[in-house]
Amino acid sequence: MRRRLLLAGGIILTVAIHTAGAADLPIPYKAPPVPAPVFNWTGFYVGGNFGGGWGSQTINGTDTGIDSNGPSAGLPLISSVSDTTRLSGVFGGGQVGYNYELPNNWLLGIEADVDASGIRGSSTACLPVISDASGGFTPGTIGGCGSISSKLEDFGTVRGRVGYIWNNVMLYGTGGWAWGHAAATTTPICGASPTAPCPGAGAGPIIGDILSFSNTFGGWAAGGGAEWQFLPHWTLRLEYLHLQFNGIGMNATAAGTFIMPGCCTINSTESISARSNMGVDTVRVGMNYMFNWSPPPLAR
Image (cartoon, rainbow, N blue to C red; front, side, top):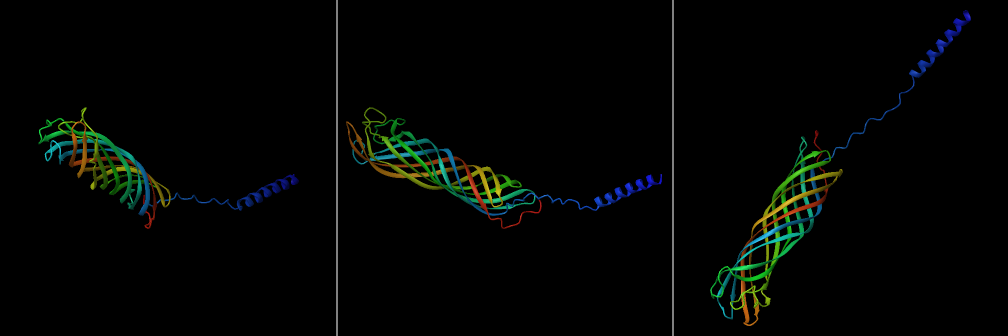
């Protein structure tokens, strides 16, 4: 009996010693969770863009031709100009801007951009006669036909931006002032003559008489996009922008020679005075480098 009591006491003591030793073992170290990066949108940025555009240009005005010789020498032939040219092409350029991120996830910004453009188009138009001092044409008949080529050579904008941020992603709307520089040429296909109306069997070829226009004009721009800050200083964006230019002046004068089979060779001076409206829709991708000189807001 005594021996059994001693054995039981030894077992209890051994278990107690092992339990106490286990309690003194160090707890394994667990690293604290790594905080998610906070992306900063405040600061200046600079970048580049590339995209494509499509749209149309409408032209309305008058075309006046005066012959220096021939049956209608010195008498004006006045025709109306009305045409719509479809435009399309690519463009590319750069932008610079500044963002200011508010504590409530909203962002305010301003941006300016400049793009070289290959957006262009061509069409064919005929000119109904308004009046003819020589009496050879009845008002409403066709006085001449020609091809019109237009190109938006450069454009740029200065716009405000309002965005909403989800850490490194932003959706935004934008709008402001836009400018453009366009060039156009009109090349006659057949010309007006009392003895050889155009179009008609007697219409003949034309040498010269090409009118060229070049103008810089202002308008407005509006659109929106999405921007992704894939690194702390770098963003990618996809943006839609509509450009609208109204009341573009088109005025030019040129001299040419009309060779009219069965009649004569006529030297003519032609002038056009017209206004046009141009609307262009653009989609572009861009990349920016952000300088992030200011700290991010305390709350997001």
